[in-house]
Image (cartoon, rainbow over all chains, first blue to last red; front, side, top):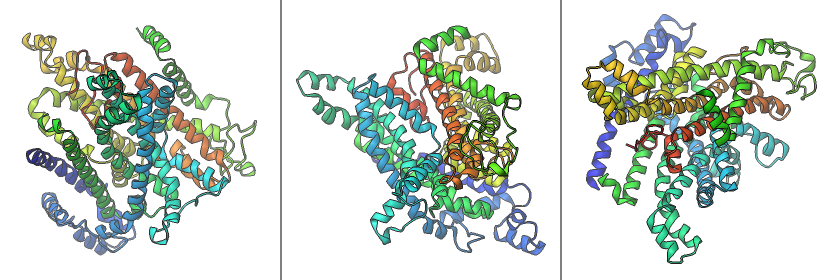
Length: 314
Length: 302
Protein backbone atom coordinates (compact mmCIF):
# COMPACT_ATOMS: atom_id res chain seq x y z
CA UNK A 1 0.00 0.00 0.00
CA UNK A 2 2.80 2.43 0.89
CA UNK A 3 4.35 1.90 -2.53
CA UNK A 4 1.03 2.50 -4.21
CA UNK A 5 0.54 5.74 -2.26
CA UNK A 6 4.06 6.89 -3.15
CA UNK A 7 3.45 6.10 -6.81
CA UNK A 8 0.18 7.98 -6.86
CA UNK A 9 1.81 10.97 -5.17
CA UNK A 10 4.69 10.97 -7.66
CA UNK A 11 2.25 10.89 -10.56
CA UNK A 12 0.69 14.07 -9.18
CA UNK A 13 3.85 16.13 -9.65
CA UNK A 14 3.57 16.63 -13.44
CA UNK A 15 -0.18 17.26 -13.18
CA UNK A 16 0.30 19.94 -10.53
CA UNK A 17 3.12 21.47 -12.60
CA UNK A 18 0.92 21.72 -15.69
CA UNK A 19 -1.95 23.11 -13.61
CA UNK A 20 0.41 25.71 -12.14
CA UNK A 21 1.91 26.76 -15.46
CA UNK A 22 -1.55 27.04 -17.03
CA UNK A 23 -2.84 29.26 -14.23
CA UNK A 24 0.38 31.30 -14.32
CA UNK A 25 -0.06 31.86 -18.05
CA UNK A 26 -3.66 33.09 -17.70
CA UNK A 27 -2.66 36.67 -16.93
CA UNK A 28 -0.24 36.63 -19.86
CA UNK A 29 -3.08 35.74 -22.22
CA UNK A 30 -4.56 39.19 -21.70
CA UNK A 31 -4.06 41.04 -24.96
CA UNK A 32 -1.76 44.03 -24.52
CA UNK A 33 -0.38 45.17 -21.17
CA UNK A 34 -2.22 43.33 -18.35
CA UNK A 35 -1.57 46.18 -15.92
CA UNK A 36 -3.11 48.68 -18.33
CA UNK A 37 -6.11 46.40 -18.94
CA UNK A 38 -6.68 45.89 -15.22
CA UNK A 39 -6.55 49.60 -14.38
CA UNK A 40 -8.54 50.73 -17.42
CA UNK A 41 -7.90 53.55 -19.86
CA UNK A 42 -8.04 56.32 -17.24
CA UNK A 43 -5.02 55.17 -15.24
CA UNK A 44 -1.86 57.26 -15.32
CA UNK A 45 1.40 55.86 -16.66
CA UNK A 46 2.84 55.89 -13.15
CA UNK A 47 -0.07 53.85 -11.75
CA UNK A 48 0.27 51.32 -14.56
CA UNK A 49 4.01 51.04 -13.98
CA UNK A 50 3.43 50.58 -10.26
CA UNK A 51 0.89 47.78 -10.75
CA UNK A 52 3.11 46.16 -13.35
CA UNK A 53 5.86 46.12 -10.76
CA UNK A 54 3.55 44.88 -8.01
CA UNK A 55 2.43 41.97 -10.21
CA UNK A 56 6.06 41.29 -11.15
CA UNK A 57 5.22 41.75 -14.84
CA UNK A 58 8.32 43.88 -15.39
CA UNK A 59 10.60 40.87 -15.01
CA UNK A 60 11.57 38.22 -17.56
CA UNK A 61 8.83 35.61 -17.85
CA UNK A 62 10.92 32.67 -16.57
CA UNK A 63 11.81 34.66 -13.44
CA UNK A 64 8.12 35.41 -12.98
CA UNK A 65 7.31 31.71 -13.30
CA UNK A 66 9.87 30.67 -10.66
CA UNK A 67 8.78 33.43 -8.28
CA UNK A 68 5.13 32.52 -8.87
CA UNK A 69 5.70 28.85 -7.96
CA UNK A 70 7.73 29.88 -4.92
CA UNK A 71 4.91 32.11 -3.76
CA UNK A 72 2.17 29.55 -4.38
CA UNK A 73 4.12 26.81 -2.59
CA UNK A 74 4.16 29.08 0.46
CA UNK A 75 0.37 29.22 0.20
CA UNK A 76 0.41 32.82 -1.00
CA UNK A 77 -2.07 33.27 -3.85
CA UNK A 78 -1.29 36.96 -4.30
CA UNK A 79 -3.42 39.97 -3.50
CA UNK A 80 -6.76 41.06 -4.82
CA UNK A 81 -6.49 44.40 -6.61
CA UNK A 82 -10.10 45.39 -5.95
CA UNK A 83 -10.68 43.90 -2.50
CA UNK A 84 -7.25 44.98 -1.22
CA UNK A 85 -6.59 41.80 0.70
CA UNK A 86 -4.90 38.45 0.08
CA UNK A 87 -6.66 36.24 -2.46
CA UNK A 88 -6.45 33.28 -0.06
CA UNK A 89 -8.38 35.29 2.51
CA UNK A 90 -11.02 36.29 -0.05
CA UNK A 91 -11.43 32.61 -1.04
CA UNK A 92 -11.73 31.65 2.63
CA UNK A 93 -14.48 34.21 3.16
CA UNK A 94 -16.47 32.90 0.18
CA UNK A 95 -15.85 29.20 0.73
CA UNK A 96 -18.72 28.55 3.17
CA UNK A 97 -21.69 28.85 0.81
CA UNK A 98 -19.90 26.95 -1.97
CA UNK A 99 -18.83 24.12 0.32
CA UNK A 100 -22.33 23.86 1.80
CA UNK A 101 -23.94 23.94 -1.62
CA UNK A 102 -21.57 21.33 -3.06
CA UNK A 103 -21.94 18.99 -0.09
CA UNK A 104 -25.72 19.27 -0.08
CA UNK A 105 -25.94 18.72 -3.85
CA UNK A 106 -23.63 15.70 -3.66
CA UNK A 107 -25.66 14.21 -0.79
CA UNK A 108 -28.89 14.72 -2.72
CA UNK A 109 -27.39 13.28 -5.89
CA UNK A 110 -26.10 10.17 -4.10
CA UNK A 111 -29.37 9.64 -2.23
CA UNK A 112 -31.31 9.59 -5.49
CA UNK A 113 -28.73 8.07 -7.80
CA UNK A 114 -27.62 4.93 -5.99
CA UNK A 115 -31.02 3.37 -5.24
CA UNK A 116 -32.40 4.24 -8.68
CA UNK A 117 -29.23 3.04 -10.43
CA UNK A 118 -29.30 -0.29 -8.59
CA UNK A 119 -33.00 -0.71 -9.27
CA UNK A 120 -32.52 0.04 -12.98
CA UNK A 121 -29.74 -2.55 -13.14
CA UNK A 122 -31.85 -5.15 -11.35
CA UNK A 123 -34.72 -4.48 -13.75
CA UNK A 124 -32.46 -4.11 -16.78
CA UNK A 125 -34.29 -3.47 -20.08
CA UNK A 126 -37.60 -2.93 -18.22
CA UNK A 127 -39.80 0.12 -18.67
CA UNK A 128 -38.28 1.56 -15.51
CA UNK A 129 -34.78 1.06 -16.88
CA UNK A 130 -35.66 2.78 -20.16
CA UNK A 131 -37.24 5.73 -18.39
CA UNK A 132 -34.24 5.82 -16.07
CA UNK A 133 -31.79 6.01 -18.98
CA UNK A 134 -33.80 8.83 -20.51
CA UNK A 135 -33.73 10.73 -17.22
CA UNK A 136 -29.99 10.24 -16.98
CA UNK A 137 -29.50 11.73 -20.44
CA UNK A 138 -31.91 14.53 -19.61
CA UNK A 139 -29.83 15.27 -16.53
CA UNK A 140 -26.64 15.78 -18.51
CA UNK A 141 -28.51 17.77 -21.17
CA UNK A 142 -30.01 20.45 -18.92
CA UNK A 143 -27.99 23.54 -18.01
CA UNK A 144 -28.14 23.60 -14.21
CA UNK A 145 -28.61 27.36 -14.16
CA UNK A 146 -31.76 26.97 -16.25
CA UNK A 147 -33.05 24.25 -13.89
CA UNK A 148 -32.36 26.77 -11.13
CA UNK A 149 -34.40 29.48 -12.87
CA UNK A 150 -37.32 27.08 -13.31
CA UNK A 151 -37.12 26.00 -9.66
CA UNK A 152 -37.26 29.66 -8.63
CA UNK A 153 -40.32 30.17 -10.81
CA UNK A 154 -42.02 27.09 -9.35
CA UNK A 155 -40.99 26.93 -5.69
CA UNK A 156 -40.08 30.50 -4.81
CA UNK A 157 -42.54 32.54 -6.88
CA UNK A 158 -45.62 30.38 -7.55
CA UNK A 159 -45.47 28.40 -4.31
CA UNK A 160 -43.56 30.52 -1.82
CA UNK A 161 -41.75 27.59 -0.26
CA UNK A 162 -38.15 28.79 -0.54
CA UNK A 163 -36.45 32.17 -0.83
CA UNK A 164 -35.94 33.45 -4.39
CA UNK A 165 -32.28 34.15 -3.77
CA UNK A 166 -29.74 34.98 -1.10
CA UNK A 167 -27.81 33.07 1.51
CA UNK A 168 -28.47 32.50 5.19
CA UNK A 169 -25.44 31.61 7.30
CA UNK A 170 -25.77 28.34 9.27
CA UNK A 171 -25.06 30.44 12.39
CA UNK A 172 -28.58 31.83 12.00
CA UNK A 173 -30.21 28.42 12.11
CA UNK A 174 -29.89 25.16 10.24
CA UNK A 175 -33.43 25.36 8.83
CA UNK A 176 -33.08 28.76 7.13
CA UNK A 177 -29.59 27.77 5.95
CA UNK A 178 -30.90 24.60 4.31
CA UNK A 179 -33.81 26.59 2.88
CA UNK A 180 -31.46 29.04 1.21
CA UNK A 181 -29.43 26.23 -0.36
CA UNK A 182 -32.25 23.81 -1.22
CA UNK A 183 -33.16 25.04 -4.71
CA UNK A 184 -29.61 25.60 -5.98
CA UNK A 185 -28.60 22.21 -4.56
CA UNK A 186 -31.44 20.46 -6.41
CA UNK A 187 -30.53 22.30 -9.63
CA UNK A 188 -26.91 21.19 -9.33
CA UNK A 189 -27.69 17.68 -8.13
CA UNK A 190 -29.84 16.80 -11.13
CA UNK A 191 -26.92 16.58 -13.56
CA UNK A 192 -24.60 14.81 -11.14
CA UNK A 193 -27.30 12.36 -10.08
CA UNK A 194 -27.56 11.29 -13.71
CA UNK A 195 -23.85 10.59 -13.99
CA UNK A 196 -23.62 8.76 -10.68
CA UNK A 197 -26.79 6.77 -11.30
CA UNK A 198 -25.53 5.59 -14.64
CA UNK A 199 -22.28 4.43 -13.10
CA UNK A 200 -24.20 2.70 -10.28
CA UNK A 201 -26.44 0.99 -12.81
CA UNK A 202 -23.63 -0.14 -15.07
CA UNK A 203 -21.42 -1.46 -12.30
CA UNK A 204 -24.39 -3.26 -10.70
CA UNK A 205 -25.08 -4.91 -14.06
CA UNK A 206 -21.44 -6.02 -14.19
CA UNK A 207 -21.58 -7.41 -10.66
CA UNK A 208 -24.90 -9.18 -11.22
CA UNK A 209 -23.20 -11.17 -14.00
CA UNK A 210 -20.48 -12.43 -11.62
CA UNK A 211 -20.22 -16.07 -10.58
CA UNK A 212 -20.63 -15.33 -6.88
CA UNK A 213 -23.98 -13.70 -7.54
CA UNK A 214 -25.11 -16.79 -9.44
CA UNK A 215 -23.88 -18.92 -6.56
CA UNK A 216 -25.75 -16.77 -4.07
CA UNK A 217 -28.92 -17.07 -6.12
CA UNK A 218 -28.58 -20.79 -6.66
CA UNK A 219 -28.18 -21.49 -2.98
CA UNK A 220 -31.65 -20.01 -2.60
CA UNK A 221 -30.90 -16.58 -1.25
CA UNK A 222 -33.78 -14.22 -1.92
CA UNK A 223 -33.23 -11.35 -4.37
CA UNK A 224 -33.23 -8.62 -1.73
CA UNK A 225 -30.36 -10.31 0.09
CA UNK A 226 -28.46 -10.93 -3.15
CA UNK A 227 -28.78 -7.27 -4.06
CA UNK A 228 -27.99 -5.89 -0.63
CA UNK A 229 -25.26 -8.25 0.49
CA UNK A 230 -23.51 -9.20 -2.74
CA UNK A 231 -24.32 -6.86 -5.58
CA UNK A 232 -24.64 -3.36 -4.16
CA UNK A 233 -21.62 -3.48 -1.89
CA UNK A 234 -19.35 -4.48 -4.75
CA UNK A 235 -21.00 -2.20 -7.27
CA UNK A 236 -20.46 0.80 -5.02
CA UNK A 237 -16.68 0.59 -5.35
CA UNK A 238 -16.54 1.59 -9.05
CA UNK A 239 -19.29 4.12 -8.37
CA UNK A 240 -16.98 5.76 -5.87
CA UNK A 241 -14.68 6.88 -8.69
CA UNK A 242 -17.33 9.16 -10.12
CA UNK A 243 -17.95 10.79 -6.75
CA UNK A 244 -14.60 12.60 -6.95
CA UNK A 245 -15.30 13.77 -10.48
CA UNK A 246 -18.82 14.80 -9.60
CA UNK A 247 -17.67 16.88 -6.62
CA UNK A 248 -15.36 18.76 -8.97
CA UNK A 249 -18.15 19.19 -11.52
CA UNK A 250 -20.35 20.53 -8.73
CA UNK A 251 -17.71 23.08 -7.69
CA UNK A 252 -17.48 24.20 -11.30
CA UNK A 253 -21.25 24.19 -11.86
CA UNK A 254 -21.64 26.18 -8.66
CA UNK A 255 -20.00 29.16 -10.41
CA UNK A 256 -23.02 29.64 -12.65
CA UNK A 257 -25.70 28.51 -10.19
CA UNK A 258 -24.42 30.83 -7.45
CA UNK A 259 -24.91 33.71 -9.87
CA UNK A 260 -28.56 32.75 -10.39
CA UNK A 261 -29.28 32.44 -6.66
CA UNK A 262 -27.01 35.32 -5.59
CA UNK A 263 -25.08 33.11 -3.17
CA UNK A 264 -21.85 34.75 -1.96
CA UNK A 265 -19.67 31.73 -2.79
CA UNK A 266 -16.41 31.43 -4.71
CA UNK A 267 -18.35 31.22 -7.99
CA UNK A 268 -19.85 34.60 -7.33
CA UNK A 269 -16.40 35.84 -6.36
CA UNK A 270 -15.03 34.76 -9.75
CA UNK A 271 -17.88 36.30 -11.73
CA UNK A 272 -17.59 39.59 -9.87
CA UNK A 273 -13.82 39.56 -10.25
CA UNK A 274 -14.21 39.22 -14.02
CA UNK A 275 -16.20 42.44 -14.26
CA UNK A 276 -13.69 44.11 -11.89
CA UNK A 277 -10.80 42.76 -13.99
CA UNK A 278 -9.37 41.44 -10.73
CA UNK A 279 -7.20 38.77 -12.37
CA UNK A 280 -5.27 37.65 -9.28
CA UNK A 281 -8.58 36.53 -7.74
CA UNK A 282 -9.63 34.67 -10.91
CA UNK A 283 -6.23 32.96 -11.02
CA UNK A 284 -6.40 32.10 -7.33
CA UNK A 285 -9.87 30.55 -7.48
CA UNK A 286 -9.09 28.54 -10.62
CA UNK A 287 -5.91 27.23 -9.03
CA UNK A 288 -7.69 26.46 -5.77
CA UNK A 289 -10.51 24.54 -7.42
CA UNK A 290 -8.12 22.61 -9.68
CA UNK A 291 -6.02 21.60 -6.66
CA UNK A 292 -9.14 20.57 -4.74
CA UNK A 293 -10.05 18.43 -7.72
CA UNK A 294 -6.58 16.83 -7.83
CA UNK A 295 -6.66 16.10 -4.10
CA UNK A 296 -10.20 14.69 -4.25
CA UNK A 297 -9.22 12.36 -7.07
CA UNK A 298 -6.17 11.25 -5.12
CA UNK A 299 -8.32 10.51 -2.06
CA UNK A 300 -10.81 8.59 -4.19
CA UNK A 301 -8.02 6.53 -5.75
CA UNK A 302 -6.51 5.74 -2.35
CA UNK A 303 -9.88 4.84 -0.89
CA UNK A 304 -10.54 2.69 -3.93
CA UNK A 305 -7.28 0.84 -3.39
CA UNK A 306 -8.05 0.40 0.29
CA UNK A 307 -11.50 -1.01 -0.45
CA UNK A 308 -10.39 -3.23 -3.31
CA UNK A 309 -6.93 -4.70 -2.64
CA UNK A 310 -6.66 -6.02 -6.20
CA UNK A 311 -6.06 -2.45 -7.45
CA UNK A 312 -2.51 -2.20 -6.13
CA UNK A 313 -1.26 -5.01 -8.27
CA UNK A 314 -2.95 -3.67 -11.39
CA UNK B 1 -24.24 3.31 -47.00
CA UNK B 2 -25.95 6.33 -45.39
CA UNK B 3 -29.35 4.90 -46.21
CA UNK B 4 -28.44 1.56 -44.65
CA UNK B 5 -27.21 3.33 -41.51
CA UNK B 6 -30.41 5.35 -41.27
CA UNK B 7 -32.52 2.25 -41.69
CA UNK B 8 -30.53 0.51 -38.95
CA UNK B 9 -31.05 3.52 -36.69
CA UNK B 10 -34.80 3.63 -37.29
CA UNK B 11 -35.21 -0.10 -36.66
CA UNK B 12 -32.90 -0.53 -33.69
CA UNK B 13 -32.99 2.89 -32.04
CA UNK B 14 -36.26 4.63 -32.89
CA UNK B 15 -35.72 7.29 -30.23
CA UNK B 16 -32.33 8.18 -31.65
CA UNK B 17 -33.78 8.27 -35.17
CA UNK B 18 -36.42 10.70 -33.93
CA UNK B 19 -33.64 12.76 -32.32
CA UNK B 20 -31.88 12.94 -35.65
CA UNK B 21 -35.12 14.20 -37.21
CA UNK B 22 -35.48 16.87 -34.53
CA UNK B 23 -31.86 17.94 -35.01
CA UNK B 24 -32.40 18.26 -38.75
CA UNK B 25 -35.43 20.49 -38.12
CA UNK B 26 -33.46 22.63 -35.64
CA UNK B 27 -30.50 22.91 -38.02
CA UNK B 28 -32.72 23.79 -40.99
CA UNK B 29 -34.62 26.42 -39.03
CA UNK B 30 -31.34 27.97 -37.90
CA UNK B 31 -29.94 27.85 -41.42
CA UNK B 32 -33.06 29.27 -43.06
CA UNK B 33 -33.94 31.70 -40.22
CA UNK B 34 -33.80 34.91 -42.31
CA UNK B 35 -36.24 33.47 -44.84
CA UNK B 36 -38.76 32.01 -42.41
CA UNK B 37 -42.13 33.79 -42.09
CA UNK B 38 -41.26 35.17 -38.64
CA UNK B 39 -41.04 38.73 -37.32
CA UNK B 40 -37.50 40.14 -37.43
CA UNK B 41 -35.69 39.01 -34.25
CA UNK B 42 -34.52 42.57 -33.51
CA UNK B 43 -37.82 44.38 -34.17
CA UNK B 44 -38.58 46.33 -31.01
CA UNK B 45 -42.22 46.91 -30.07
CA UNK B 46 -42.39 48.47 -26.63
CA UNK B 47 -46.21 48.50 -26.72
CA UNK B 48 -46.32 44.70 -26.50
CA UNK B 49 -43.36 44.08 -24.22
CA UNK B 50 -43.40 40.90 -22.09
CA UNK B 51 -46.62 39.74 -23.77
CA UNK B 52 -47.57 36.11 -23.04
CA UNK B 53 -47.68 33.56 -25.87
CA UNK B 54 -50.40 34.32 -28.42
CA UNK B 55 -51.21 33.61 -32.07
CA UNK B 56 -49.04 36.54 -33.18
CA UNK B 57 -46.17 35.56 -30.84
CA UNK B 58 -46.31 31.79 -30.15
CA UNK B 59 -43.45 32.04 -27.60
CA UNK B 60 -44.50 35.49 -26.30
CA UNK B 61 -42.35 38.61 -26.41
CA UNK B 62 -39.30 39.79 -24.46
CA UNK B 63 -38.53 42.92 -22.44
CA UNK B 64 -38.25 44.97 -25.65
CA UNK B 65 -41.36 43.48 -27.22
CA UNK B 66 -39.25 41.37 -29.57
CA UNK B 67 -40.67 38.04 -30.72
CA UNK B 68 -39.18 35.26 -28.54
CA UNK B 69 -39.70 32.57 -31.20
CA UNK B 70 -37.77 34.60 -33.80
CA UNK B 71 -35.02 35.20 -31.29
CA UNK B 72 -34.82 31.53 -30.26
CA UNK B 73 -34.45 30.59 -33.94
CA UNK B 74 -31.92 33.37 -34.60
CA UNK B 75 -30.00 32.32 -31.47
CA UNK B 76 -29.88 28.79 -32.81
CA UNK B 77 -27.82 30.08 -35.74
CA UNK B 78 -25.20 31.48 -33.39
CA UNK B 79 -25.23 28.80 -30.70
CA UNK B 80 -25.14 25.91 -33.18
CA UNK B 81 -22.36 27.60 -35.17
CA UNK B 82 -20.31 27.97 -31.98
CA UNK B 83 -20.99 24.33 -31.06
CA UNK B 84 -19.93 23.19 -34.53
CA UNK B 85 -16.78 25.30 -34.48
CA UNK B 86 -15.81 23.94 -31.05
CA UNK B 87 -16.48 20.42 -32.25
CA UNK B 88 -14.36 20.89 -35.38
CA UNK B 89 -11.49 22.51 -33.52
CA UNK B 90 -11.36 20.09 -30.60
CA UNK B 91 -11.77 17.07 -32.90
CA UNK B 92 -8.87 18.22 -35.10
CA UNK B 93 -6.63 19.06 -32.15
CA UNK B 94 -7.69 15.97 -30.23
CA UNK B 95 -7.15 13.64 -33.19
CA UNK B 96 -3.70 15.12 -33.90
CA UNK B 97 -2.60 14.97 -30.26
CA UNK B 98 -4.06 11.48 -29.79
CA UNK B 99 -2.40 10.07 -32.91
CA UNK B 100 0.98 11.52 -31.98
CA UNK B 101 0.76 10.41 -28.35
CA UNK B 102 -0.42 6.94 -29.29
CA UNK B 103 2.12 6.36 -32.06
CA UNK B 104 5.30 7.97 -30.74
CA UNK B 105 6.28 6.61 -27.35
CA UNK B 106 8.52 9.57 -26.54
CA UNK B 107 5.96 12.22 -27.34
CA UNK B 108 3.40 10.24 -25.36
CA UNK B 109 4.96 10.83 -21.95
CA UNK B 110 5.11 14.61 -22.33
CA UNK B 111 1.86 15.08 -24.22
CA UNK B 112 -0.22 12.97 -21.86
CA UNK B 113 1.11 14.77 -18.78
CA UNK B 114 0.07 18.08 -20.33
CA UNK B 115 -3.36 16.72 -21.21
CA UNK B 116 -3.77 15.23 -17.71
CA UNK B 117 -2.93 18.63 -16.27
CA UNK B 118 -5.51 20.35 -18.47
CA UNK B 119 -8.12 17.78 -17.47
CA UNK B 120 -7.52 18.55 -13.80
CA UNK B 121 -9.44 21.80 -14.31
CA UNK B 122 -13.20 21.68 -14.06
CA UNK B 123 -14.21 22.38 -17.68
CA UNK B 124 -16.51 25.37 -17.30
CA UNK B 125 -14.28 27.12 -14.79
CA UNK B 126 -11.20 26.96 -17.04
CA UNK B 127 -13.23 28.16 -20.02
CA UNK B 128 -14.52 31.07 -17.92
CA UNK B 129 -11.02 32.02 -16.82
CA UNK B 130 -9.66 31.78 -20.38
CA UNK B 131 -12.40 34.00 -21.80
CA UNK B 132 -11.98 36.41 -18.89
CA UNK B 133 -8.32 36.81 -19.88
CA UNK B 134 -8.72 36.76 -23.67
CA UNK B 135 -11.80 39.00 -23.71
CA UNK B 136 -15.41 38.11 -24.50
CA UNK B 137 -15.95 37.35 -28.19
CA UNK B 138 -17.20 34.45 -30.27
CA UNK B 139 -13.69 33.57 -31.44
CA UNK B 140 -12.18 33.58 -27.96
CA UNK B 141 -15.09 31.60 -26.60
CA UNK B 142 -14.67 28.93 -29.28
CA UNK B 143 -10.93 28.66 -28.62
CA UNK B 144 -11.46 28.48 -24.85
CA UNK B 145 -14.14 25.78 -24.97
CA UNK B 146 -12.21 23.74 -27.55
CA UNK B 147 -9.07 23.92 -25.41
CA UNK B 148 -11.02 22.59 -22.46
CA UNK B 149 -12.60 19.68 -24.34
CA UNK B 150 -9.89 18.50 -26.74
CA UNK B 151 -7.86 16.50 -24.16
CA UNK B 152 -10.73 14.02 -23.76
CA UNK B 153 -10.89 13.50 -27.52
CA UNK B 154 -7.11 13.10 -27.58
CA UNK B 155 -7.32 10.37 -24.92
CA UNK B 156 -9.85 8.41 -26.91
CA UNK B 157 -7.86 8.66 -30.15
CA UNK B 158 -4.68 7.73 -28.27
CA UNK B 159 -6.33 4.62 -26.84
CA UNK B 160 -7.46 3.56 -30.32
CA UNK B 161 -4.02 4.29 -31.77
CA UNK B 162 -2.30 2.19 -29.11
CA UNK B 163 -4.54 -0.74 -30.01
CA UNK B 164 -4.36 -0.29 -33.76
CA UNK B 165 -0.60 0.10 -34.08
CA UNK B 166 -0.12 -3.47 -32.82
CA UNK B 167 -2.44 -4.86 -35.47
CA UNK B 168 -1.06 -6.89 -38.36
CA UNK B 169 -2.26 -4.55 -41.11
CA UNK B 170 -0.45 -1.62 -39.54
CA UNK B 171 2.70 -3.66 -39.03
CA UNK B 172 2.46 -4.75 -42.66
CA UNK B 173 2.19 -1.14 -43.80
CA UNK B 174 5.25 -0.28 -41.70
CA UNK B 175 7.16 -3.25 -43.13
CA UNK B 176 6.26 -2.14 -46.66
CA UNK B 177 8.01 1.14 -45.91
CA UNK B 178 4.95 3.38 -45.68
CA UNK B 179 5.74 6.78 -44.27
CA UNK B 180 4.32 7.71 -40.87
CA UNK B 181 1.86 10.28 -42.18
CA UNK B 182 0.25 7.72 -44.46
CA UNK B 183 0.13 5.04 -41.78
CA UNK B 184 -1.34 7.40 -39.22
CA UNK B 185 -3.83 8.98 -41.60
CA UNK B 186 -4.90 6.05 -43.67
CA UNK B 187 -4.50 3.01 -41.47
CA UNK B 188 -4.92 4.28 -37.96
CA UNK B 189 -7.13 7.39 -38.13
CA UNK B 190 -9.63 5.79 -40.51
CA UNK B 191 -10.04 2.81 -38.18
CA UNK B 192 -10.27 5.06 -35.15
CA UNK B 193 -13.07 7.09 -36.69
CA UNK B 194 -16.13 5.46 -35.06
CA UNK B 195 -15.21 6.38 -31.46
CA UNK B 196 -13.94 9.75 -32.68
CA UNK B 197 -17.27 10.54 -34.34
CA UNK B 198 -19.19 9.50 -31.24
CA UNK B 199 -16.95 11.66 -29.06
CA UNK B 200 -17.43 14.60 -31.44
CA UNK B 201 -21.17 14.36 -30.99
CA UNK B 202 -20.75 14.57 -27.22
CA UNK B 203 -18.33 17.49 -27.59
CA UNK B 204 -20.92 19.26 -29.73
CA UNK B 205 -23.52 18.73 -27.00
CA UNK B 206 -21.20 19.87 -24.21
CA UNK B 207 -20.04 22.86 -26.24
CA UNK B 208 -23.63 24.05 -26.54
CA UNK B 209 -24.04 23.75 -22.76
CA UNK B 210 -20.72 25.54 -22.17
CA UNK B 211 -21.67 28.30 -24.60
CA UNK B 212 -25.00 28.70 -22.80
CA UNK B 213 -23.24 29.05 -19.45
CA UNK B 214 -20.61 31.49 -20.74
CA UNK B 215 -23.17 33.60 -22.61
CA UNK B 216 -25.38 33.61 -19.53
CA UNK B 217 -22.46 35.06 -17.56
CA UNK B 218 -21.85 37.67 -20.27
CA UNK B 219 -18.67 35.97 -21.49
CA UNK B 220 -19.93 34.77 -24.85
CA UNK B 221 -21.37 36.54 -27.85
CA UNK B 222 -22.75 39.87 -26.63
CA UNK B 223 -26.19 41.30 -27.33
CA UNK B 224 -27.73 42.53 -29.62
CA UNK B 225 -26.69 39.28 -31.38
CA UNK B 226 -28.88 36.74 -29.60
CA UNK B 227 -27.66 33.38 -28.32
CA UNK B 228 -29.62 30.94 -26.17
CA UNK B 229 -27.37 31.78 -23.24
CA UNK B 230 -27.52 35.56 -23.48
CA UNK B 231 -31.32 35.40 -23.97
CA UNK B 232 -31.49 33.62 -20.61
CA UNK B 233 -29.23 36.30 -19.14
CA UNK B 234 -31.69 38.97 -20.32
CA UNK B 235 -34.65 36.86 -19.21
CA UNK B 236 -33.69 35.72 -15.75
CA UNK B 237 -34.87 38.82 -13.89
CA UNK B 238 -38.33 38.33 -15.44
CA UNK B 239 -38.64 34.76 -14.17
CA UNK B 240 -41.62 35.75 -12.00
CA UNK B 241 -43.40 38.05 -14.45
CA UNK B 242 -42.68 36.52 -17.90
CA UNK B 243 -41.83 32.83 -17.46
CA UNK B 244 -42.11 32.14 -21.23
CA UNK B 245 -39.12 34.39 -21.78
CA UNK B 246 -37.06 32.02 -19.57
CA UNK B 247 -38.68 28.75 -20.60
CA UNK B 248 -38.35 28.75 -24.40
CA UNK B 249 -34.64 29.50 -24.89
CA UNK B 250 -33.92 26.86 -22.24
CA UNK B 251 -36.10 24.29 -23.99
CA UNK B 252 -34.17 24.96 -27.21
CA UNK B 253 -30.90 24.17 -25.40
CA UNK B 254 -32.25 21.06 -23.68
CA UNK B 255 -33.88 19.61 -26.81
CA UNK B 256 -30.76 20.16 -28.91
CA UNK B 257 -28.36 18.74 -26.34
CA UNK B 258 -30.63 15.82 -25.42
CA UNK B 259 -31.05 14.84 -29.09
CA UNK B 260 -27.28 15.01 -29.63
CA UNK B 261 -26.69 12.83 -26.56
CA UNK B 262 -29.34 10.30 -27.60
CA UNK B 263 -27.87 10.14 -31.08
CA UNK B 264 -24.29 9.81 -29.81
CA UNK B 265 -25.30 7.01 -27.46
CA UNK B 266 -27.12 5.12 -30.19
CA UNK B 267 -24.32 5.47 -32.72
CA UNK B 268 -21.82 4.23 -30.17
CA UNK B 269 -23.89 1.16 -29.35
CA UNK B 270 -24.53 0.40 -33.02
CA UNK B 271 -20.89 0.94 -33.98
CA UNK B 272 -19.72 -1.49 -31.34
CA UNK B 273 -22.17 -4.23 -30.48
CA UNK B 274 -19.54 -5.73 -28.19
CA UNK B 275 -19.51 -2.71 -25.91
CA UNK B 276 -21.03 -4.04 -22.75
CA UNK B 277 -23.67 -1.88 -21.15
CA UNK B 278 -21.26 -1.60 -18.29
CA UNK B 279 -18.73 0.26 -20.37
CA UNK B 280 -21.09 3.07 -21.22
CA UNK B 281 -20.71 5.34 -18.25
CA UNK B 282 -16.97 5.01 -18.29
CA UNK B 283 -16.75 5.82 -21.98
CA UNK B 284 -18.77 8.96 -21.49
CA UNK B 285 -16.41 10.35 -18.85
CA UNK B 286 -12.97 9.48 -20.13
CA UNK B 287 -11.45 11.67 -17.43
CA UNK B 288 -12.76 9.45 -14.66
CA UNK B 289 -11.65 6.07 -15.90
CA UNK B 290 -9.87 4.48 -18.84
CA UNK B 291 -11.54 5.71 -21.98
CA UNK B 292 -13.76 3.24 -23.76
CA UNK B 293 -12.25 2.20 -27.01
CA UNK B 294 -15.61 1.46 -28.51
CA UNK B 295 -15.79 0.87 -32.18
CA UNK B 296 -12.40 -0.75 -32.47
CA UNK B 297 -12.99 -4.40 -33.22
CA UNK B 298 -11.53 -6.68 -30.62
CA UNK B 299 -10.38 -3.79 -28.49
CA UNK B 300 -10.27 -4.02 -24.74
CA UNK B 301 -9.96 -1.18 -22.26
CA UNK B 302 -6.40 -0.06 -21.59
